[in-house]
Length: 123
Image (cartoon, rainbow, N blue to C red; front, side, top):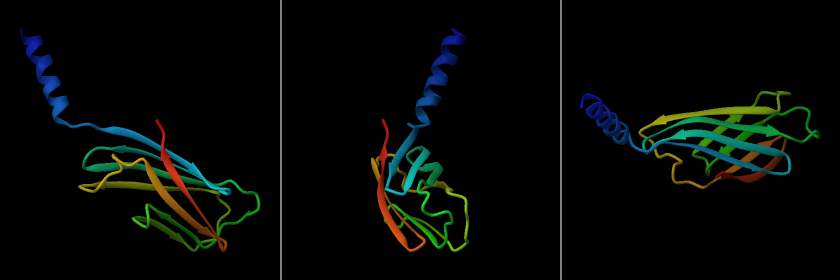
């Protein structure tokens, strides 16, 4: 009897926590690839955007600007770097999350170039 009550209690607690999702988005442009791996609930998000310059035509990145979701998240970096991978962590609580989103628009400006692409939710 005690085990049955314990099992019911655990199930009630787990269902009260609300649904949580691990979401994965991917996309690319001619020069860039991007992805977002995020844990999202109804009220919080925690994850990382990762962008990689795939073109060998640009050995150095300077004047980098990344606008995500029409500017709701931005990165502006004037440093000169040869690192072609950029990680942008996201974490928020009490915020609008990406839980009901299937596409995230991205625009990247670098070295006088601009490319836009969409990160698509992967099933």
